[in-house]
Amino acid sequence: MRFEILRNAAAGLAMALALAPGAADAATNLVVNGGFEAGDYSGWTTNAVSYPQTIVSHTVQEGTYSAQMEGYSFGPNTLSQVLATASGQSYALSFWYNAQGNSANGFNVTWNGVSIFSVTDQVTTGFQQISAVVMGSGSDALVFTAYNDRYNTFVDNVSVSTPLSPVPEPATWAMMIVGFGAAGAMIRTSRRRSVVA
Image (cartoon, rainbow, N blue to C red; front, side, top):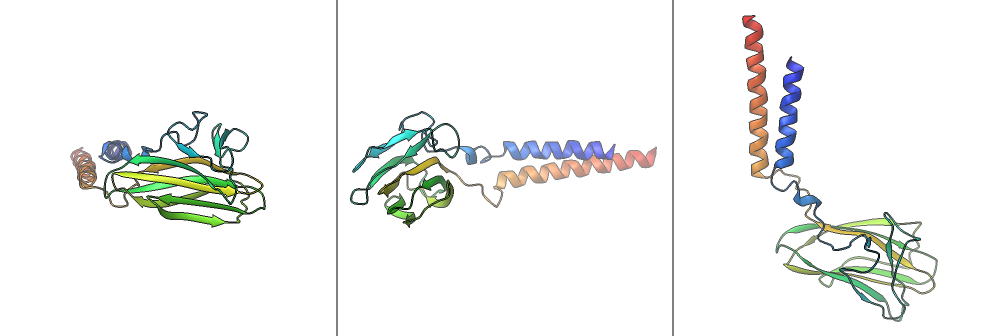
């Protein structure tokens, strides 16, 4: 009986937390076509300075497609998207990249012109995930710049979303307190019934 009461209380608490404000926001990706699964550059602006940019299916991190960013060191190619954000809000930026070969290469990622990740002459052994926290200003430019003189650099699964807060919001705390209070009341009621019986 007590186990069932605790299980029901826990289920109610889990539901309250799931319905709390901000729970659904964390999963919303602001990047359009971040996995390039449209099979094209929909949502993105490309600038193929020195070599054509293509969508490929032979080297992907997940799904069917990824963006292949060729380009030479004398004219790196760019891939960008402008995102609508909330000014002053922190966002979790995540993407996967793969720089093939052992030739001269460079890869730089900027948020509103500020570099948040940059490497040169790196050879990856497959896709690597990069994560960073960026600050929204209302309208923000995410730009990938790459060159690889003899091989290719690939980008996949780009996302910008509201990070999960390590401290619950006030509404979440209120729901947790109500849930724990209800569980405690149910246990006390169960004990009283046991004593009377």
